[in-house]
Length: 99
Image (tube, rainbow, N blue to C red):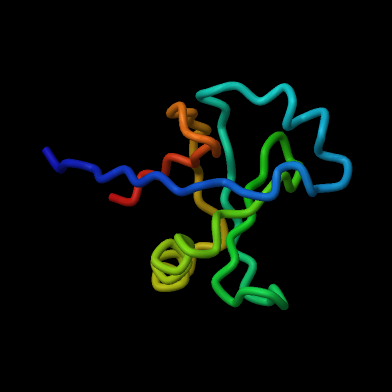
């Protein structure tokens, strides 16, 4: 049996996505997310978008995103599944199976 590693990444910018406020307000722990690589982002070449219910709702925090983006690029992944987690800190998290 192979142990799978799960990593947590901070989700930011949820209050700044036009048209996403209703979805963001309804999101619950365990909600499925899709992380989408955004290599042409003008502000961060390692940017990874967070999507929920087919709507772009946020980004992975810039100071944490580079290892995730590099891993996605190395395996030619444009998207990766994740799960919404709340751990009691200020920001929600995306739990990703990086195994």
